[in-house]
Length: 396
Image (tube, rainbow, N blue to C red; front, side, top):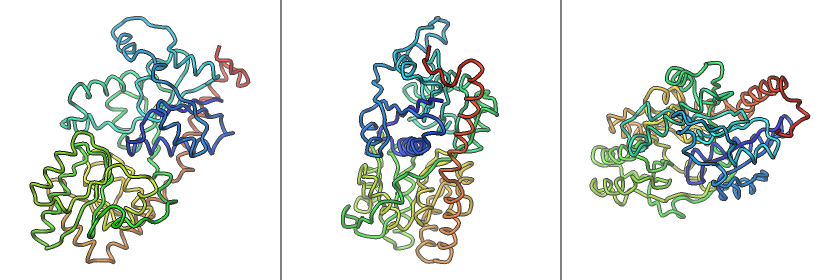
């Protein structure tokens, strides 16, 4: 069976891109179980995949059809024409389409079935945040989910809580929703060591937070914690932030200056993948006070590399890390300060947390992820045999 694998995230999307890249490389290593054909909607992703020796085709955005056609169909305007991008897939004798991210273009498919991925439902979990609410963002997300999920052959989610919420909120059939937890970035264990302090101008001990500058990432919580560490504990701990600006960077930097922490905050922008492992290894801890989940990739990477983790004490998120992380009360930045003091002074507790984290990291592997995907593809191949000979891939 020929499966089209669609990558739509851009390199600077951070964790989303890394998850798509990890999945694509995993599938490329499984060629033969099924025939995987890769398509990317931006040229940068094409270049990255080719560097990983993954054969990929560029799918130009102009081939993805008019984005408003799905909306027109929901309003009762009949449209049964085949979109240009689907014609490309049919030409390539595709049997099933696998979207590695939430995708509105799935709604334009007329002749092909699809599997779709849902990373999160945070516009429902925390609708207060501007990035999932303002300027029609909430409505756009709802439109995509309401139209694409009911028709999907299968839906992939990151955690049991995500499955539960998806079934409850969008009426999905539970048997079609499959849990496949995130994987660490594929390069995280294979990079050489870099002197972070020398290369990036960090002068002292630091906590590390790799995250895009969205409001929900809650960088200001870390700043409040650093202020407490200075004022109450006499510790001049620094913070290193990596990631792209998503309209909240200036607010965070201005707040740091207001607190007198300008020299303690190092914003190093979007950094190369080969440096990420060194950021973790040389940090006091990964500190991730995000509101969004229920799972995230950085704790998995930190666990794998033996870096202590401070993580949000929120439903779902705490389930991802169990007692392997120091859980932070997001209403009390003093809890972060107390955890940092513990990490610096109690090596026994830190060793116990690191050991538990490595156990979690080892408990979900690429083989586990592949087994979920293989089950979906194998079952679809059996059903497709009812109307299509596996040897006949003409797309007609």
